[in-house]
Amino acid sequence: MLRITDIAEEPLEFLTPISGYAKMPLVPLEEAIEPLVSILPEVQSYAYVAKQRCENPADGLTQDESASIMLYT
Image (tube, rainbow, N blue to C red; front, top):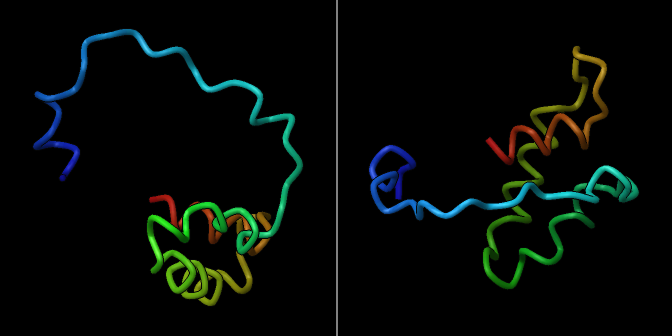
C-alpha cells in the first residue's frame, strides 16, 4: 500500500522509538539484508542494482551507505 492511502489505518497508539541501532557494527549491505531474503527474495537483486548505481558517491558516504539509502527510499 502507499503511505498516503493507508494513513487512515494507522494505529493511534504511541510507539516507542527504536533504540540501540547506533551501537551496532556497520556491516556490508549484502550481510545486512540477509534476514530479509526469506520474506523479500528480490532484495538481493535490488541491493546489487543499488550498489551499481552508487559506485562513487559524491557525498562522502561509502558505497554501501549510499546504496542502503537508495534501497530504503
